[in-house]
Length: 634
Ligand SMILES: [Zn+2]
Image 1: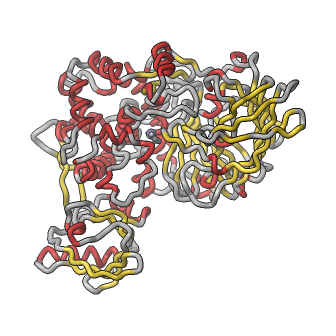
Image 2: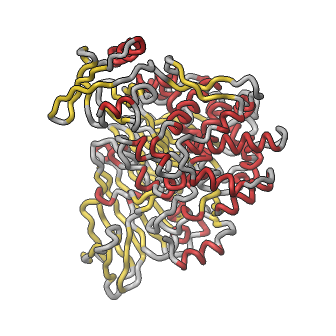
Image 3: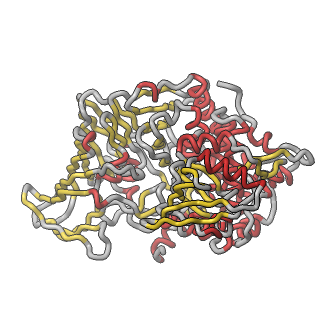
C-alpha cells in the first residue's frame, strides 16, 4: 500500500546512505536487553488479543510508545484507540502511567528504585466494521492475520533496528500458521519465535487459521522457497485452478528475471480471503494480501485484483530494499514524508501490472483494460487543475482516508494510477532512445536489484533516482519528472500509451474489467457519459465537475429513485442514456437528498462511453514487447 524532519535526522540520513542491515540473525541481537512479547490469540475469533510484555528498564523515568506511523501505510494510523485494559507493574507492584498530552501515542512512567523490568499488560479489541488492516478486519471465525505493530509498546529512543524482541504466540487449538518470522520452538498451540530486531518483527506479519492452505510456488532452479499461504472460511476459496497456481509460480520466476537479485531468504504471500476489503501491505520477506473470499478463485475478481500479489511483491525491491529517505524513518513515531511516493507506489503500480501480464495472471487485453481505466480516470480528473501529482504524494496520509465523494475534484492518491502512466512513459522513452536495446527493466536491475542477501535497506533521494536513470540512458530526467510532478494541465500524461503504439478511446461497450467491477463492486460507471459514478442501487458515489450530471445539480450522497419516471436500475438508466442520443429532451431524475425529494434535468445526449485502448498502426507495438514474459512457462 501506500503514504519535518529535524536536523538530527538530516545528519543520520547522510551517513545511512550506506546499507542499513535489518538482521534476522538471532546472535546479532542476543546480547542486548531484550523486549519480550507474548500474545494470547485464543480469543481471536472474538476480535480480542491479550498482550503481555516484559520491557527492560533502569530505575527512573521511561517513555513507552505505541507504533503510530505504519510502514507501507505511510500514515499515522496505528490503532491506539483499540487498546484497552492497559496496566504496568514492576516486581508485581502497579506503576501509574500518564499519557503524553501532545503525543497521544506516548506513555510516561517511572521505574521504581531497584526495578529492572516493566511488565505491561493490555488487550487489543477489534470492531466488527471492516476497515483497513485493523484487527476488526483481520479476525474471522477460524482465521486471524496478525500485524505485530498493533500489539506492542516499545521504549522511545533507540532505533527499532537496534531493539531486540522475542515474541511468543498462543493460537486457538489446531490452527496452522504461516509467517516469514524465524521460529525457535513450538509446543502445541504455543509458538516461540527467534529473537529479532523490532523492525524485523513488525515486518513479519503472521497468518493463522484452521484451514490454512500452503502451496509451494518455488520455480524450478530457484533456491529460495516461495509459498502461497491461503486462509479462508471455505474450501472452495482456496481450491485454485492449476493455471492460477502456475501463474503465481511464474510471477516468482519473472521477478527473478527482472531484478536478478532477491533481498530475502524465503518469501510468503500471506493471503487473507474474507470480508470485503481489497488491499495489501508490503514487507521484505512476505506480503499481507486481503481479498474477498473468492478473490483468487473467481475469474472476475482476478480481473479486478490480479495484480495485487505482484504489486506487493515488487515492494520487496521497490519500497523495502530501496526506500525514499522520507519514508526511511528510524522508528514508528517519526513522521514519514511522502514526496517520492510516485516512485515507491507509482513505479510499483506500473511493475505490478506489467508482471501480472508477463506471468499470465492477466491476458494482455486485461492489462490494457486496466491501463485504459486508469488513463480515463486521470484524464477526466478535475482535481488535476488545482492539485499537482507531487501534492497528491505529499498529502498521501490525508488522501488515503479521504471520501470517494467529490474524488475527481479533490484528487486522491493518484500517484498510483498516474504512476502507471508516468513509468510507462519512462519505459517507452528508454526503449526509443536506446533503439530497443535497453528498457526500464535495466533500470530496475541496476537500481533495485543489487546483490542478493538478507533484508537490507538503502535509502535514496530524487537526485539518486535521476543519476541511476542517466546511467541507463542520458536524458534530462530531472526536468522530465519535475514537469510532470508540478503540472496543472487538465490532461493526463498519455504519451507513454501513445509512444507504445496505442490510443485511449471510448466506445459504448463496457470492457470486461468494467463488467467485473459492476458485478463485484455493485457500481455503475457513468463518469464518462452522464458524469457520475453510481452504486447499482442508485446511490451517487461521485460526480465529475463540469459534466451534465454536475450541471443538473446531481451531488455525491444523493440517491436516484427514478429515471424518466421509471424506477432506477442499471438497466433503466442505460436504456435512458441510449434513447437520449436521439432526442433533445433531458433525462429527468427523481433523487433524494437526505430527506428532500428533487427533480433534476440532465441534458446529456452523447450515449454510453467506456474507455478502451485502440491500436495505433502508425507506430510499433512497444506495449506488447513490454508485456512479453522474460521466462519460459513454468
Ligand atoms: Zn503499494
